[in-house]
Image 1 (cartoon, rainbow, N blue to C red):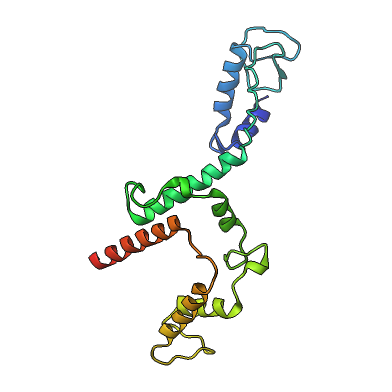
Image 2 (image 1 turned 90 degrees about the vertical axis):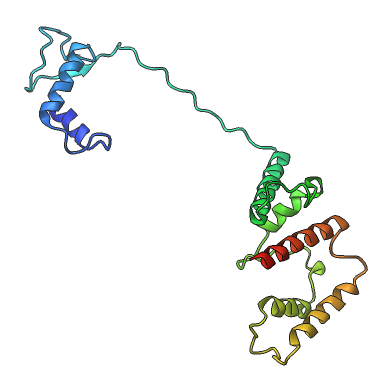
Length: 207
């Protein structure tokens, strides 16, 4: 009994190799006294445990704690999942803008969580959102111009670098979007972008 329990305690991360054989004997004495273990032949005797080759077994009829029931996780509904995405996005936006409230910036009712989920999950290896319907994608030359503006004033070797190039590039992009039959932003999102841009610009001026 001592050999077995001593080895078990030494290999247990809650006790470790510092457990001595004497400590193990003391523990087994308490086990025997409280009838946690008993003589293999069912004899109690003096109930004085000794470190010898005597065999002991666990008391079969001792009371055990009831086994806890495994809690089954509740499956979230699609609406609840979208609410989580909306909440996380609004929290990040509020933190980024350094605001205590988004009340004057946007109306949460205008936030479509389905768009958030799509833009966060349907992306390529570079993290760029991909369209399921490629016919709605922007022309390659427009994407190239927008990429050039995003990286300005760094220039790609294949792009011209004359003075005023970025203005011409911006006009090319804006002319394309002006030619579309409908705006790329709704009125609500336009106000949102303008509000955020105004706050960001004001913050930059202060700092």
